[in-house]
Image (cartoon, rainbow, N blue to C red; front, side, top):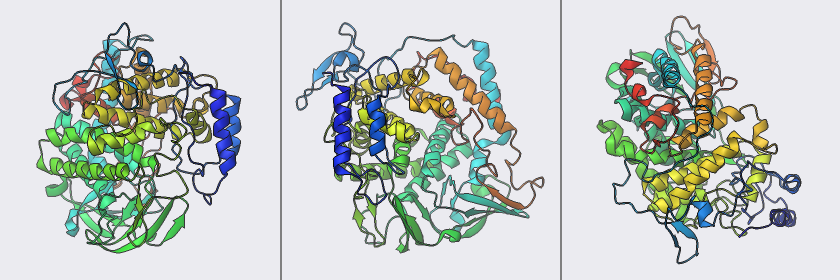
Length: 591
């Protein structure tokens, strides 16, 4: 079935106008907006009607609209969903919905140890030569060797140190200033830090990848500490010992000030002095998208300051990273890594089960520890706009199904693309691209983990659709005007390649170009070691102070190590074009 795009946009605009904005300055105030589109060969074609909708649809902050690619053929037609040619892949009709779903047999291990079906794309662009790939590989890896990347992460991340006697963890905080005084560096919280699990998620999957490839202690330690950091977002939101909701997630948890040394026994470091100061942020606030308050009797850390209302902007990254937790649990050679990440996987199952069982809502807690569904806005809901089209935000719901139950409980998502609402989302906020494509990748990755191949195959085809549309955007693609578009697309392609997307030669060249540009810029940064005598005393903020800022045409520091996730992924497609030599990556002696 092919719907009329103008009709759906008019319905969408009408619903918005009739409902108006009633959220008191927070989120979109309209429910039941359609998520429907039609498929085509190019990128998003944004009609003038969609642009008019933007004028009446006011969105604030963390609105995660399920963007898809329009002008494709209807996603429920089997031959379009799965790329079936002459019956190459069998399909069956779902007894409840009537959807045509690929029927792909599988009798291997769960989680699979390789991409469990064949998937190819027509190549495009000039292939990289073996020499070009090797030269780029060594150039990129030289950066990681020079700065000892994962040891650097251990030194500059913070949470709670085990020497305090309390549960230890690390996170990658954004709103922090490093204060150097002689031989001690203190990490001082300087802001609300709502979104630290966007970078933390990427670094966790990168550390898992490098650890599984090489057994490196420092990468393993990052994996352990960040797995504990993920759990801390839930343990820290436990009100007291009688709290019956242990799996709800905070935006962040701030514990107590402390100082310690990074010794050899625990960190394999040289005894440098490090301190953490949260107390600068020990005060309450109430905003439309978060509140901060004190829990005086948390059973893990005592008195803690909690920021509530975990939203989809970080969760999309977290559930994508969850794809790789079963592999580190199964294959970690060190008990300390295996135990920490096993607990993280348990907590992610609990967190996502609560989402599913709460009607696909991310619940939160109030200052008295009571759990509730966030009212009057969509930042924690996967069903806010679903009534007019069940496919709206389907990948988000499906990802939670997979993590919590290992089977689909929501509707069939098809390719995960094709939504009018998608168009409005990316016109309104550029960051909605990342929210949308990360939920798409999370749905695919966790479907692969559980060998739900009838869902996974069309979702992978949907990533190929996105890749084509983003690499060759139409003139109306709003994101293509952003200065970071090319680099963000390169990152999306790399992450998609970790989940089975076979790269074209053109895409491989783009990733290689962006990564080389990034490491060349990072190599010029001078403060990788704040404890060095060459660095004077002073205050150094995160962005550009003790971490390099994002270079023009490059990716952020938290993204640069995603090459390790890619090389370690069991789902890396052997038919894709190479941009890096993973045989060299997994053997640091060849760097």
